[in-house]
Image (cartoon, rainbow, N blue to C red; front, side):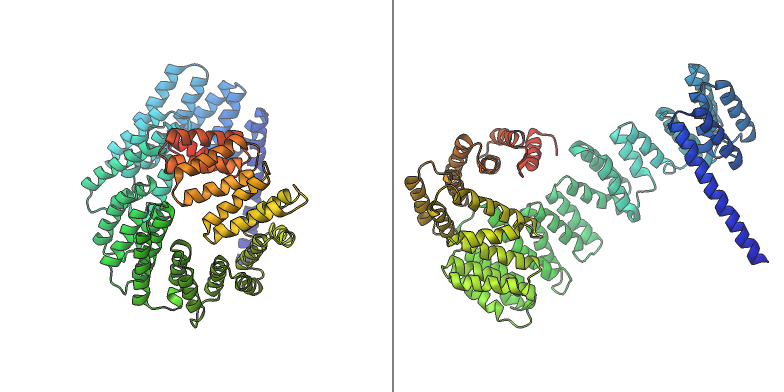
Length: 602
């Protein structure tokens, strides 16, 4: 019997809850639709049934006020006050009703009466303050919570409420002050605090206010680890990675950590191309941590990779810089051994030898040795074969290059590596003038899973189609493709000579802007930035309707911003790009760079 009673109870309770939820939805619908009489009737029934549920009661009063039935609303509030004298938020509802009637002084009296009566009951203080907040009576809400903290004798208890009030008022400094005073300021809640500030702080000025408040907290509570943690986070958010590293090192030593904090910061800095800070961070782990620690070897690997990226992306290096880096790679491999755990380091060494030191024989030998190492991961082997194919192609060994590409294509048919191998084979066919087969492959690769390969395939397919149809002969396109292969093989003078022959033999040919663009790119690689800028500008001036125009605008803007030290000119070019070429793939980034140079703090 008891079991049956429980089942019947739950069935009845469930039915009641479902009916109540339906009533609430119906009342809300009537209110939104302006049918206030109907919404008032249902909300009153819900309020009476619940004893006193604040939402239902307030919505009942709102419906009556919408009907301008103030007498009924006043009577309802007075009855509720008699039944629930401790519900001080009713005075706020009453005051709001009086305000709607234009009785401002009487409304203020009700608000003051509520604040005077709140006493030491935390629940009543909280309910009253929140009622003022909902009515956007922020000053009264602030007064309520501040008085509540004094009465209760606890400066933390309503600090979060005050922070929220100041947030709504867009007063950053007191918002931050009270939020850090709240009970959120404990290490277990640091992620929530960081999310809060990331959501509501805007720009460097806000973060500077936060940083100053945190320094005050550190001085007042030197043993609370929360505040130094937050200071490191602020520096990271502000992209001031060097200062973040100082803070991180202090925390790493203070907490006797294993370097995880430093390693994470180094990766963030490296990804944002602050290579100097990343290098210092990785070096700290190598110098300060035990070689057996979990981050030691990874830090040594990343130290090498970051040095490589710093040299490559800066585009301002000497052969001596490259040789020093190569020797560091060799020293690392001598120390750690050459095996599957260091295979990616060997790949990077080969890239350094082949693409930057132009020592193809050394790169080919390095990769050939890698392919012979037992137990190496199949993906590493595939990447080694693709790189080796590239170096064979650069060395003029076309047959071995296509053979390696085909091996990877066959082994990874449905994988990104397979698509990459097919693209390389198609590009090789393009280089040697087999345009029809190359275009067929590019057309297939338009649907590649890799967006980069897909976009490149589309571009090359369109490029072949456009230039193959200009004449009855493929000769201009063949000369251009041969020149591109020569560039790939680092035979720049021969490539330029062949490109010059296109403009001589076929004046005003559609490839002229492409010739200028490829030459400009090579000047840029050679750090001949002024000469590159002249050619990019020529494309912009003479071929503004051609496909290379937006590429030239972007490249020239980048040159002025990062290498020619003319930020005004860069800003002007970025603006022209996103206005005149709004469909360009560069337009979004151009707008961001423009706003940043303008000082918007994006």
